[in-house]
Image (cartoon, rainbow, N blue to C red; front, side, top):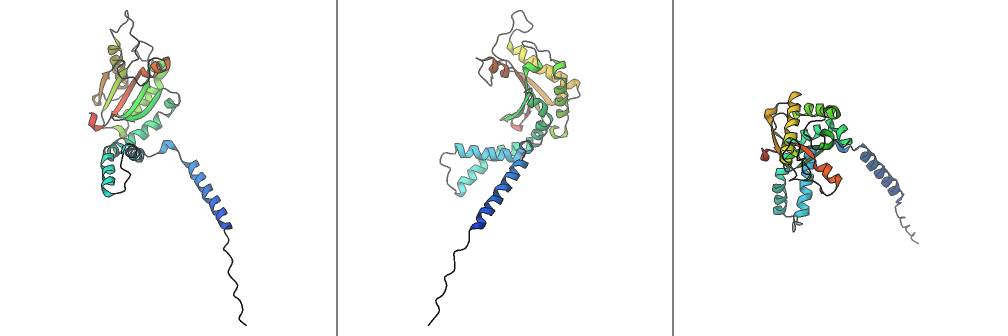
Amino acid sequence: MARSKKEPGKPSTAWQGTYGDMITLMLCFFVMLYDPSDSDAVAMSVLQAAVNNNRNGGESLGTGKLANLGNIVSSLPATERGILLGPAKKKAVTIFEPDTKNNRITVTSDERGLVISLLSDTFFERGSAELNVQECRDTLLRLSRFFNDPDVSGKRFRIEGHTDNTPVDPEGKFPSNWELSATRAANVLHYLTALGVDDRSFSIAGYADTRPQFDNSTPEGQAYNRRVDIIILDEGHF
């Protein structure tokens, strides 16, 4: 009489719980190590271009070669800008960390290039174009160090003055916000020059209240609109 074969038992899956726990712990470990301030500006620019393409691409969900070629071509300007301005952005984030934490400076980027915004209420009295040197001396020194750094040498810069929509004092020094905004930009450049920055790489502009970033109907919006932008220009905006 033949022996009946014993059917093999189902393999144990107990190891899967331990493996899953290990993967989760490794993920948490690397997330804790990640520092956003050390992000590669070039890689972030490429990633942002890819996200924008996917958001605005309409019917670009296909994976064909032509669709991929379109995404690559449309992201080339953003990629090139990231390569050119990446080191400058990293340097700006590092140097101006104390100022960004105190809301004296913001560091952003747009189609013009890398934008360092000086919030005017810190640097100027309301309605005045005279720099409040005692209040912002350390920030101005960091600005001069940044513009003398090799990572930004050879680039072109523009200093733009902006105001809110409050009319100037009729008895004051400036006929309108146009003169006030332009003089603020010029005074920032004069002070940087006194600290050793080469003014031949700079241009200045005054925009009065024509380019607000926030709603001028609130005091907070007006405060952010009173600003001086220093722009490391993208090559297309020289």
